[in-house]
Image (cartoon, rainbow, N blue to C red; front, side, top):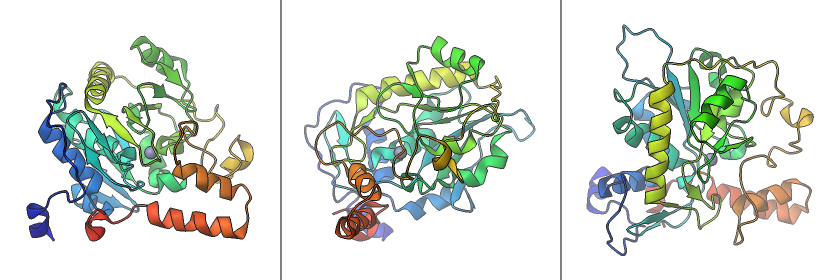
Length: 312
Ligand SMILES: [Zn+2]
């Protein structure tokens, strides 16, 4: 298979334009990002240690350095669809959240001071609302703070992590803040450390038009690297008992989320075919036939093995 891969690296990639990528994102970065989007989910096992459904990748800090550090989180599962790339933009539903995974594993380490000293947690099943981040709760409290790059646009979502010091740090760094509604890090809301989900500049997630503009991505990564550099040694405590839970057993009873498919930071008003919308509508009550269609859609779209299908 790997032999094949060298001959035809990205069979579903349409390269057009050939224009310059006028940002910190290089052509090599784009090639890597496309590989991350196309890779089978199990490919990521070898990047770190398997812990249940999660992959844990320790940072490159000096082993003698016992200081708490930062945790970066991304989810490996994704929706699939045609991938295409121009000189300025990549389009594929896999960007949510392979873009975030690529950024924390590959690009940010070259942009932050001292290389990648943060640990990485790669999760599964976020798109099904069953994020494996839940299995990491006990280990999360030792960090200074936690970040995820699993959000459209350029703002930052803080969920239940609304402690004053944390919001002041984010706001003071120039971030537009949103409450957000669900992602992996919500699993840590009852813990004692603050977390944030930074926008990673993709748009139209959960649709075939999911895309990212490379210049916007580069600027966003520079902001994230700058925040990290400034605050990596500061601990942002979180009062986990003071906030309503967004996630976990019973979460949907006590919160505004009426169904496990009614969460998420997804926007449904963008026109075109929104995959998640279909799933949600059916879960909110529909005919058996519609349910079946939605189940098929979910099977089709949920972490398809692109290495076997040739990316078609
Ligand atoms: Zn996502």
